[in-house]
Amino acid sequence: MNFLKLMLALLGFTFATAPVSAKINNSKTISVKVLGNCEMCKARIEKAADVRGKSTAQWNEKTHLAVITFDSISTTKDEVLKRIAYAGHDNEEFLAPDEAYAKLPGCCKYQRELMKPEVKVPVSSNSMDGMNMESKSSDNVPKSEITPESKNDMPDMNMPKNETKISSTGNTGISKEYNDWLASYIAIKNAFTSDNASGASSNAEKFIELTTSLPMEKMNMDQHTEWMKVFDQLKSDALLISKAKDLSKQRSAFQSLSKNVAAVVKVFKLNDKTVYQQFCPMYNNSKGAVWVSEQSTIKNPYFGKSMPTCGNTTEVIKAKK
Image (cartoon, rainbow, N blue to C red; front, side):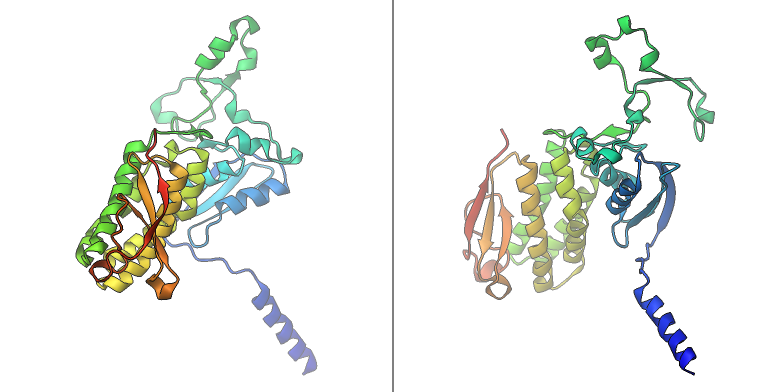
């Protein structure tokens, strides 16, 4: 009897301490080459890929293949691979920023073979998938032909067509899309200032559309890092605003949305007009809440018509030059 109790206790302990993996809905699994060397690389790659309930990865040190499972509705393969690249690991789609690679420990500094310009053997379009492309490294080109100018002109032909090296410098390539996105947030805010629940709902739908379509491949490293921090929450808060009928529930979601929009605005620095971070000290049981406005005049979105002038400007984010 004592033995049976002991076995049951051990069995219970095993189940209690076993790791629990969040279920991934709409799951799609792919295998992708990700460069790395060691167990530290494995931990870093898998940590970068892992977002609870959305994506996970298992990386093999010998084959350099990462088996990635992700929710095909709420995220994409590119989002997962960009996070891995930002962690310092080149992969089939994205090359890590040089700064991220430089920060890797010595044992993790793999040979950056995906960065070598190579000449691919032409193949027919029908035989592209699944083929290994024979190539010649630029090391085989006569040294007399490799000048600083010719190096700059040489395409990185080892990249797949859609592969992108993530920029670590400023990038204004998303200025228009970004300002359209910011304008859709302002439209939500303005609907709340006039207590317009249906207007907030319809503008939130537009905000979700623009949030999802903002081209991440054009963001620089700082922008993309901030964007990935808040991306899911932006969509979640906007979805709640779009679905809720009650102004109080919408405004509760707007508080979280505004906090993250303010963070994005200050990192991206792409607003074509000066905007203002403003603060209401009375909202949320006097804990306060921020919002972003296109005007310096206070028009409170949390209390609307009942307390339109409650609040003050806490920060001015000037228009990009």
